Length: 297
Ligand SMILES: [Zn+2]
Ligand SMILES: [Zn+2]
Image 1 (cartoon, rainbow, N blue to C red):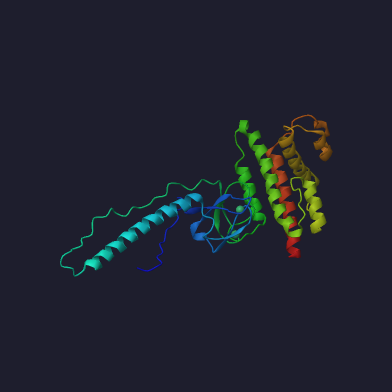
Image 2: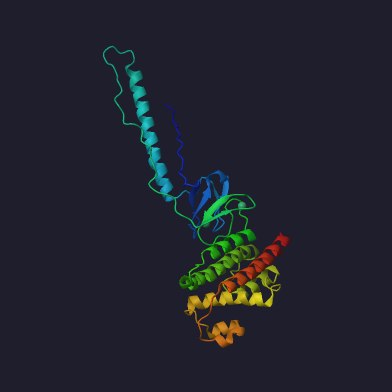
């Protein structure tokens, strides 16, 4: 009997050929899926950018399955070996004849889980890896690219979740305003990390602007038309009042958006048109940031 014996156990995929992965980076631990034929040796977490080998990041469910299927293989193998041993031990013996007993057939171990449903499927235009993620993400897991394409995928996803039903629209708009600000935050944090150890507050548009002026020498909003920029400023402030003031236009809000002074004390109005204008302006700002950093290498 050889000392080392290896068994190949495959991890089952979902019906579309994707396999789940669970990031093990501290503070991330998020779930995503990658199309099996698109797995490369090295992959990246789409949320935090951590690098990992394709055999890492298996989920707890997958691990359980692999263990169970592995045990069945080992059981089969051990029984075979034992029977072979007995056969050869009694070969040629006149008094003892060895007849192997009947064995239960090898069991096919089926997984006790199904991969989770994830809401966005995305194919990277740079490296063609197909993957699925939850909510906001910042990187392609195949090539780690983090260009505007990733912004566009997030934006498409935010828009797709907007309800077409009037009664639900305000609620879904509140989420959309928040998600768009989160997308901005993820992008700015990625870039900011490369420029300095100083942490920026990218939930506030003008703090982000100041940050990149100071550390990157670029004004990310100076080329945006005034009316578009107003929509972007409102996006940040409205998100803020919906989280902290029940949606009311506060003194603090008016200080940031003096244009809305007559609305003091009313509930901030959210609209698809404003969200779209703000998204276009945000794309412009992030594009400018990306270009300015490419130039510097
Ligand atoms: Zn991660
Ligand atoms: Zn890619």
